[in-house]
Length: 576
Image (cartoon, rainbow, N blue to C red; front, side, top):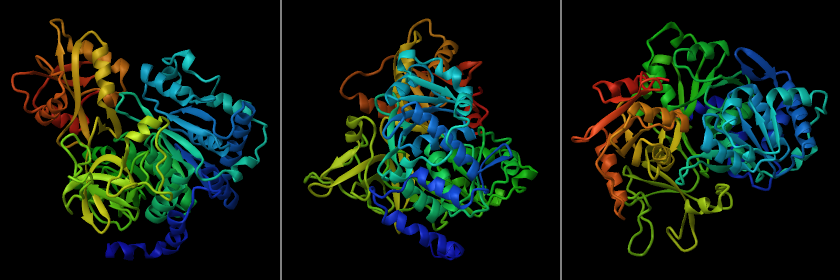
């Protein structure tokens, strides 16, 4: 931490300027994302704001485009509190559409373009949107949604540009009047119901991220460019990256999609000096053969979450990156940890109120004989919970019942409330933690949260599986937990057909890599303990049970073979 303080010295003025926003900003203050953006556009209109495949658009031009689209949305009846869905792959159009929505005080519902069928239909219907803005490249996905679920107004980006041409490009008057507590985004996250939940991101929490992560942690300068290849429906891109860019008056370079083999080429093309990551991205880069572009870039810092301790030094040394700004947070979480002191192998520092507590075998907070929670010892893995206060509010989900399930009441004294993250961390001291694991009915794979019940529903819906239990298992050399299913099947089981059914009904990251054929599955009140047992056995202790692994879209499930785990770690499997 002392070394980190010395490294901060050149950015002291920036940190001092942003510190009050982190600590003193109030939900009623008239500060929003749209207002911050248009103020930045006013201060430096000619500075590049968005860059895509080497071509830049200035702050001023982007603001005019945003305002014209906002004027069109207003004509369509969109106003404060309305919801506008955005279904888009990575492009400048997605950012411009989002800014147009939030400038009006409306809520941008950021849909996951990997979803299809029932899952996407559920997400679109959940928004109850007044309009939906569509990337033309996502038309195929939207075609799988029931027409009755669609909002009355659907516009693709080409129509937005054409129909907004010539409209008023001045800043909407309403933008300056909106309080920070106004809802900004709905970010979809997996839920225990098996279908996605929409977590709420207010302008207030986004602005706190801009001050804390962007201004205090990342500390971009005006000449910096943040490269973003992660999807814009994720908070790593939408909140962490964009807020860091606006905090520093920097440029955001958008990658169409992540490619391990072409990553550094795109970074160099877009003249990036920083990028955002998830752990899988970094591991895939390290797994690539060494080449000249490993050091032919100007990247000096990276920000993200999930950097594995065992590759931390390798990643830093090989690619010549001085600062790894690891953080821990979640779409619905009311605090964030960030590695402001540039320490190694830590999720970072947080000055806001939290506790690390002991938990039960089922992953619930453990209460003592007096009904109170017990803090874990320093260095002991425990459940992370964050206190809910007026200055540290919990925005929750669109579903009040789902929101309440995450709240712990009377934890240490009567009347106190805490948010249950469902994550295990290790207290490292000095207000630092290290991430350990995710609890509950979700697991994280490929940077996405996967609901076990969603996958079980897809398995049971077809004609190949009678019953199923899904859980996450660690895969050596990989981040997160891969999906594994224990299933009962009939005599005509066809593993290739099962894979085809799952590819049609689930995003690629949610399809189980391992399928274990079992004789029966318990259906008693002790079912949870059976699931724990199956998870503990994983794919290496299946006894005489048949085990299949996912080879890819073309070959489907094949017999488990030596080397499969290594193929997964090297991104050689599954294919397609």
